[in-house]
Length: 192
Image (cartoon, rainbow, N blue to C red):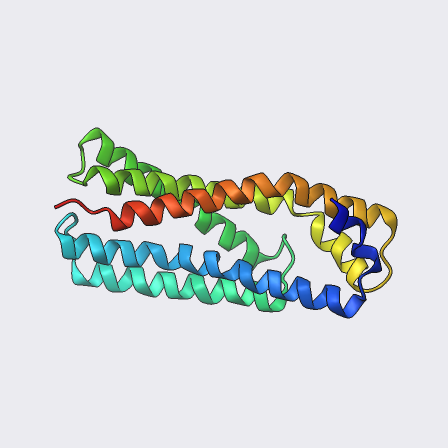
């Protein structure tokens, strides 16, 4: 909390640079999430857990790459929450959550011949994606308040808003990274 009370005294150029670095770092898990779909399908195909036609794999990769271009366009152009691109991205994320839950649940129920670790990994990725959407909502007021601080026109209430949001987001971010580490660990643990 002490660091946040000093945010207003941070030179605007330093605050803008820090904000840009954090924004760019945020694109790593977003990119990984989008590429997890076609990568997972390909690995499941290679392991024999899934039988897709070759055209299906190509279609999955094409769709993921288009989604990736959309996500990076949103990031680079700083598109607003109500823009059509953001709405499409949000719809795709909800669709991914639904597919992950259906696939993971089917594996646990035995209607799909998936190993236990894979079913659990799919459910964990669904939870992580959902948590990411919750964080988006929570962080909504952060941008404008931080923007005013970075522009050198921030007030005490902006500093308080940023501090409050970061305090609320910290446990969720730690939980998100824990889920991602668990998913990665399950990916490494692939019993024969």
